Image (tube, helix red, strand yellow):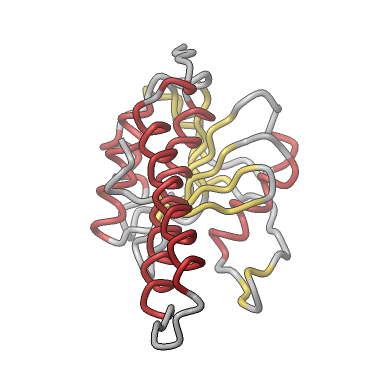
Length: 206
């Protein structure tokens, strides 16, 4: 497997530079706050947009770091979620890391095939009998499809999550698995890891 060192990634340098820019913008706001005719609201809105951008870039960076030691098929997963996001095909993809997952889920249909983006996309194509559950990946292989995961009761703010997102969180709360989710409603991509859900930008997912 690829055990590349994430510390020297160009993406990490970009994130650090953007954080420095946000800090500089905040400092600039501090410097002009005493000017009575200066309104900070527009500046705050821009800083908030920058924070969201940094958050998504960081999620992509760490997603790659978390997956690299456990699969060589990151590019296949990347293409897969980008295509599914574009078409708004919902999906739930479990990447096994060190923990044994079978006791935590209701097993689905064995696949035991090499991981390719086209195979995962076909599994989650609307109307496919296997598209409702989760695809399970171990190393470079699609182990099974239509697996049923434990559901989390967690809310995000005051909003109850959809079933796929609750399943991603539920498994990540009970194991070190990483679970990719593509929303059918919005096409947005996120991943569950250690009991948290992180949005990722498909434009940065490579």
